[in-house]
Structures are given as C-alpha cells and as structure tokens.
Image (cartoon, rainbow, N blue to C red; front, side):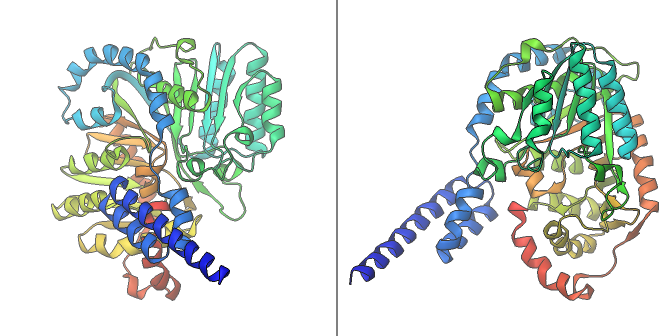
Length: 471
C-alpha cells in the first residue's frame, strides 16, 4: 500500500509540475510554434519533457541584460558619435532604420572591408595583426583547438603579452569543451586575461548548453577587427582528413565599425566576469579611405524581438532583384521561410548555397524538410561540392551585404550569441557577389524532391524538423 501511495503521489507531482511548466511555456515562449510544441510535449510525456524543458525551455538571460546596462555609457557615447554619420546614412539607397534598430547603433561611414577567403588567408592576416599590436588584443572564439593552429595562436599571444601588450581572451565552454586546462594555464602564466572554459559555469549548466556564444572576434588596438565563420582549429585550414577541404569566409574590418565590434566583446566580457573593460579600450576610430557604410549587428537570446531572425527578414524583404545567401545549415523559422518564398514569388533571383557534405547530421537532415517548400516557390537550392562549406554570407541586390557568424537556422536566430558585419554600398555587394558566384560554379542544383531522396532522409527529415528550435 505504501508503494502504491508513493507512486500515485509521484505521478501526481509529475503531472502538476508538467502542468505548471506548460503554463509557463505558453506564457514565455518566443513563438506560437514553441509554445504549442512545449505544451504538447510536457502534457503528453512529462517524464521526458520536464528535464528537457529545464535545460532548453527557459529563455530568460538576466545576466546578458545586466551586461548591456553596464555597457550603456559606451553605447550612448557611440550613438552620439554615429548620430552625425546617420545623416549620411539617410542618403543611402536603402532604408537602414530596421538594421539600426536591431543593432542599437547607427550605420557609420569611413570603414574598410577585406574579404578573407578560407583558413590560410584568414589566419595569416590575424597573426600578422597580432604581431603588430601595440596596446591590446581581444580574442573570442566559439571553438578553439589545442592543435597546431591553436598552438600557433597561443604562441603569438604569449609573445605579444611578453612585449607588454594587454590581452583579453575568451572561448565558449560548450564549443571549446575539449580545450585542455594546460592551454589556458600557459596563457595565464604569460599574463593574458583569460576566461577559462574549465572554470566557467559547468558545461551542463542549462545556460551554457542552450545559449552558446557563437561569435568569432579578434580586435587589435581598436583599429583592426576580424569576424566571420572561421574558428581556430586544423579543420578550418582544410587539414581534417574526414572533412577535407574547408570553404569559409572571414572579414578584416577597419574604421569606426571596429568600435562597434569591440563594444560587443566588452559586453560579453562583462557577462562572464562582471569586470568592466570599456575604459581600458580605444574608442577613437580611424577612418578608412574606402569609406564604406557599415554596421555591426550583435544578436543574442536576451534580445526582445528575435533580432537574429529579424535581421535576415529585414534584409530579404528589402530586396528588389536578388537574394543570395550562403550558410552551412538551413533550418529557418516561419518568418524567414515566408520572406524567402515571398521574394522568389516576386520574381527575384533567390539562391541558397549549402554544403553537400555533412558535419552535423540533424541540421543537415532538417534542411531536407524545407527544400520542397522553397523550391516550389522558385527558390534555388545549391549544394557546394568543393569541400565542406561553412561561410555565413549574404548579398541583397547591389545595396546590402553581410559577413559574420550567424547561420540560417533557429539556433542562430534565437539561441546563440552572433555577430554580423553589414555593408550598405555597391562595392561590398559586388565583391561578395563575385565570391559567391565562384562558389556557385562549384555547386549543383538540388532538384530531387524529398520523396525521391534516400530512405533515411525521407524518414528522418520531418522528425529532425520538429527539433528545429534546439538544433
């Protein structure tokens, strides 16, 4: 009898907890689909759903907002600085208002852009800038390996620290979970300000599992900045025997836009450490003769309006002629999916470049559940065959272009911390268009519908799509 009463009590408590969680999910979920999905899951299978909801279902990120408030002074100063520049932005052939609202900053002029194609060009450029550093270096990677590439970066930073350069260094505790403690210890012994993943909140902490910092940022002296798709590891150099050649794109930035990138780093550093670094950094921008209008858009799970999704929605709906996007994954939310279809139905040239090869099976499978719907609206799906394609770039007509860290998936839209560098000038759009056109030549169009794919794809793609909010 005792065990029967105990079992009945446990079942009742489980259902009560599931009911409470379902009400919370209905109230706090960011999308109707998420609210419905969690509610059904919690009430139908509470034993499995409750632990999953505790890890993946809670979207509040109070520390992120605290970091934003701590950086408010610099944000205000930056807005004052760029308010003069925004007068020129109004003369641009595109309405920059939605992008500025998403970023919380204004488009600034006097910027330079150099596209860095693949690993060799990217790492050579970064290491050369570190060698030239005089005041400080800021380094942030989602994935950092202790292989030959990671050790070379470590050696350059130690040499810079030995000659008196101040270095702030951080990685993500999930992406860099395999980084050995000895790697961080060597940096610390050289005087590097290091956020060691091993001493952060444990990797199983729900905020670390679900809300990952996917940014890749290097800034030298507040003068030169780097962001894009490449992490620090041998696979990004195309040296992994399984993945083979690696196609990726990074951007070298100069001008006032570097200060915007730097502000994002300072906010992340404060979130981790509660240590303000704003007053220790250079906020006097040097203008580039290229004079490209640009904006850094940093998004994260603390944003109130789903800024990652809104960024892509705003760009796609601004198009008049073409929408070209490159991403390793295609798991869009309903808003971006509708924008892509609508652009194609308007007669625009809409192309999405994806890899043919696989690094993560679930996102790869989930993409097949979207392809038919997009192709029926005349969206062109292209599969890159020259190796694994990992770049995150887009170009809209000859007016808007972007390079950064955000994928075309729900995780980048709503769960990860991401950075995109946007440009509002024909020269940048032309350079990225020419780059993507070369990639298109190494790609083939996907023409087979889902019902003609391999059996495992037909069976698993719809299931993988259901997991889109946490892929």
